[in-house]
Length: 345
Image (cartoon, rainbow, N blue to C red; front, side, top):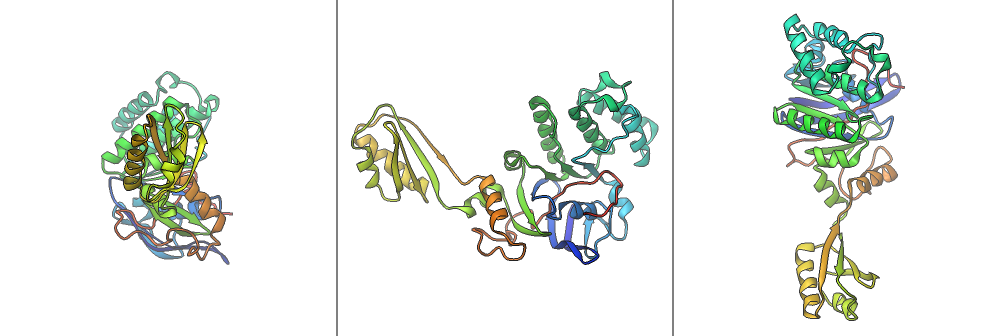
């Protein structure tokens, strides 16, 4: 659905994006992460047909972004971090305007607008100008604008920003529904938990290049092979530490308090059963066993702390795409207002 090879964009002597390649199939969500200035905006603008690449190329929904950018724009939906609404208009008039731009008939526009206003709980605000809308309401209109023409590809930048928890959950559910309808979705979010829960793959950009890309679980595993295990006992056990130290595979054990034991292991599926069996043999009553792996936040912080923009060999993991992953070397997006073509600063 989205294919790019060596996508590059220069602004004078400045290289905003350098040799990004990606493959995002239908029915997949790619979460894109990276700090401001990483090249996310420029990459998405090229993929959306808003600006031409300096070199390399891409196809989106079967259309070449160089040769047929108008067809590309007609088949993508954009949700930007700044909605960029025409706030002196009402939501129905605004959506009708964009529906006409997309070539939708009057009946199609009316039907789609009614459905989307109902979906986002905006029907009661049909006659109000958007200048008085809250941030969350404006974000809902931006989502409606992106979905109105039933696009095959979605670029979503912070789609839940400004929404209350229930509305945010509804939007996440909607995105997953759109995924199941075989749309290719690029999701940009600073909510790393949201990225980890929703995305098939996560990619991190730095200085215009992809630093690391893989499924969230694999990124975490590649960043650290250890897990931290916590065992909660019903009551103190004097022999607990001595017992745990003797278990093969237990690393750096310690007592957190009288009833909590913690240790690290690289093989939890083997080490934990042995540790529990030994504790049971000593008469321990175990209340709970939990373990924590390296978080996606840890991976992201590690990349930003150590990557110099050209060499990531010192980062645990790899900057090369996983050849077995269905998403390869993807991109990130701080999306522009629709049709906006100002250069990245």
